Length: 103
Image 1: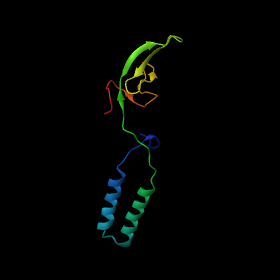
Image 2 (image 1 turned 180 degrees about the vertical axis):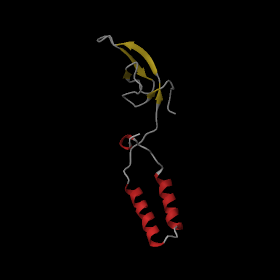
Image 3 (image 1 turned 90 degrees about the vertical axis):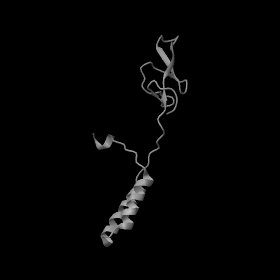
């Protein structure tokens, strides 16, 4: 996997707490304290992402568009119109995996 395409969400508070405990328990003198303090600073300055919980849905109504004769379906989560082979709803972001409801 390439690093520029990998996004890994972490628990910020747990990571910061772990480094703080290491800093508090550090017996490595000024150099160790400086290292852990720098790590805490990097953690605090790290960019954040807006993440939302994954929604699951399933296609419900299949119908043909009367103007284009293209087949469409609707999302069970938002009733948005999507293509029959879409894996994600373009309106609400739900994954079309056959599960109905938010889990």
